[in-house]
Amino acid sequence: MSGKLLRLITAILALAAAGPLAAQVLPDGPVLAAADLRPEQSLDGEWTWSIDPYRDGAAGFHGGEPGQASRRFADVDVTQASADDPLALYEYDLDHSPVSVLPSSWLTHSAEMRHYQGLVWYQKRFDTAAKDGERQFIRFGAANYAAEVWLNGKRLGRHEGGFTSFAFEVTGLLRPQGNRLVVGVDSQRDGQSIPPPVTDWETYGGITRPVELIVVPATYVDDAWVRLKDRATIAVDVSLNGPGASGAQVRFRIPELRIERTMTTDASGRASLSLPRPPSALWWSPDGPKLYDVEIVAGGDTWRDRVGFRTIATDGPRILLNGKPIFLKGISVHEEELGANPTRNMTPQAARALLGLAKDGLHANYVRLAHYPHSETMLRAADEMGLIVWSEIPVYWRIAFDDPVALEKARRMLAEMILRDRNRAAIALWSVGNETPQSPARNAFMKQLAADVRVLDPTRLVTAALLVGRDDSGPVPVQTMDDPLAASLDVMAVNAYNGWYTGDRLADLSKIEWRVPQDKPLLFSEVGAGAKAGLHQPDNPGKFSEEFQAEYYRQTLAMLARIPNFEGISPWILKDFRSPRRQRPGIQDGWNRKGLVSETGQRKEAFDVLAEWYAKKE
Ligand code: GCB
Image (cartoon, rainbow, N blue to C red; front, side, top):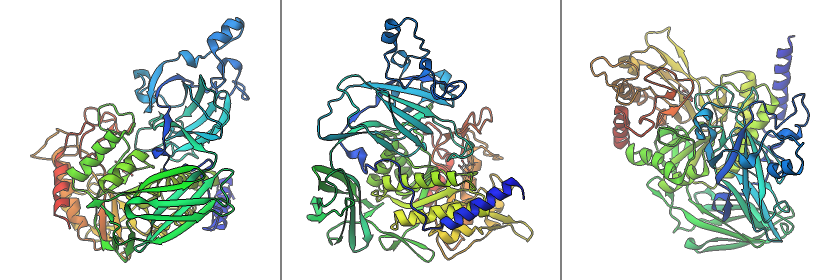
């Protein structure tokens, strides 16, 4: 038996043995739920940076520890140290390196950095007034792809995964003046990474979301989850951390609904509560995205969030929001702001500009936030604007499905996403992957992820974007979907590009027959065609013309409308987005052109086709 086959069989056996009861994989650090609403000292703004293409700061040139000359993370004032000892050698000086404003990707720090992938060191100097009895955490919204963090020369830890938040406790490590926070961010991915090295979007290496110093009392609310368990019941789970976590009194309040309850934590610092949903509580929905201020007071800490109450469920082939059938009129969105030179800094204005195009422009009630957990800013905007969200982890295309290390990473990312975001009413669907090719190892891997979702959050629907098959042997083409993963999902979803990646004539699309399981709702998580804004070919529309894209939308929507369990769609995609794969000069120039608007927001003809279809669709 070949080594590869043996490795595959061992992995499948390990995964099968792990099964849905395998120990949960949880984030390494604190949860710090709703951290984005806590008062904080922002560490955004000016940071210095230094490239390290050979990773000298991470290891010596024969391996082992890096030498003094390249230890960027050391708590050393290089100017002073060189003056004190003229023979000492330093080949870096982060105090005098170029300055850039974070959050942002290094791709926009300078023209030379536009295509840099690898290790970059960042440094922030800051003062802070830490008080006795308090605890401090440094929290990163995201660092893409992996980050290693040092404070005042002490290593705090490492985080892998470019799209979820992480935090390190720094109590006792801060000084009033001149703290030196150093982060080595490496954008390079390998065969065990999630996402894999090859995708269809730009790798925005760097610190792309806010960095903050969060101060809490010795005992604080680390995690809290407030939601409707069913139409009649509000459920609350709280987890305290600190010396006073066990046996603590916890007060839960929703002032606007006159709800006030107390509970006591168990030995592990946890407490739970269920209470009837007051009849006066308004439902969260796209038509009325009502959010309530909620408050949890415990151990001297006050935790706050804004929570909407809604239910999401399926009934046979239908999706029910608050008990009523809903068709998901959506659009896919990448985390990339409008503009000619995006850096993936999703400010509230940038998020609202994108989601406003969906909600007000397209009359959408739904967005697929592809292909990784988007920023908290985006999710807050969706909550406030009333857009139902599909959220996903970047288990995309070719992951090392036979590798237990990759599985553990995917499970951790999934847990980080769910624990960060499960208070967001907008999120209705957790997706565990996109276009993953079937194999026994992949099927086991994906099943485990679906099982994890059900443990971490049984209140939402599990889905995945699946691949389709095609049979051309009969009189009309037949599209099929026979993925065994469908059995583990609440909602099936498929990506389909007939007429774009296939040679089908657009006029023939409506003849295609879709022979897919009909016992569950089916979403089209992607359909799409490219067009360069302003390229018109009215007489004989070819690929990349606006007319072709518009006709593609007309014909595709007509084809899908005949599928009985077609319950929603998120065409690919709202906006042209950067993708290094796409290099046709004059047309693509490094952009995937399947947007309904250009990178600067210019609407293409297909935008109106979809907007009109949504306006008419019940
Ligand atoms: C897909 C992928 C998406 C790509 C898109 C395309 O199926 O899921 O990430 O960008 O197709 O444009 O080809």
